[in-house]
Image (cartoon, rainbow, N blue to C red):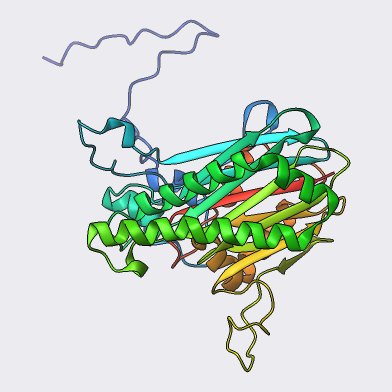
Length: 346
């Protein structure tokens, strides 16, 4: 008997029959998280309201050895928590015709190894009214030397206290342009500060050159009629000026003289001995005082000078976050602490 035939129902005209589920399409592959690494992007990304937002970046074809962000914290002593050192310090001020920005940042190497920041930044205003004086002290210590930060902090604090006690006389000398008096007085003050470090080194059983730090101090009068800027110090560090889009190293290497680099015929400044400079700022100038961790790449890397020159040639100083991003532009081979203080002249 032939099989029973059945009529197949037809869908009404104009009605689309339901689709028969087919094989499920494969999900798209997950995005590689490395593609979102900010170090592979531009040095700036869009922030709220379209404002540029600084992100970690580096200059040059090769990425630095260490990560861009802090890693390990330094070990703390529960009996000396007042000595805990922050990874990063920011400071800023505006008086009269100038704007100050300053930052001190733990180096990539110290962040990776869980060591404390050894650089020291101290900013203070002494006095009131137009007679007041702003001091910015920058000290950089060798990360290979035990208790290096202690030496940097000690010399910074001692120098700052001495400047504060002499604020009236120093302010008068700056406004009157008594350059020789300033130089001799500040050199005596610096010598006494380092004499204290040598005495402390003897107490600790260290060699003198093992318990020390490079120092640069910037004195800024608050008086808007006075544009004289004074910088003094000794040891590793740097003083640079950005004028008309060009960087000038205001601490050239010591000249060869019959009496040696520190003899009486040697010029002011240089890598050894006491360095002193008192100059009149021009509108549009940017003055940079820094520890050795930034001075070294500023002298050796044209790429860094060019990038900072482009960023800091604008009439207005960057905000604190922008300045921090600028001062920490990374290059392979430079992983020490960085401390910088910059002054924009209007």
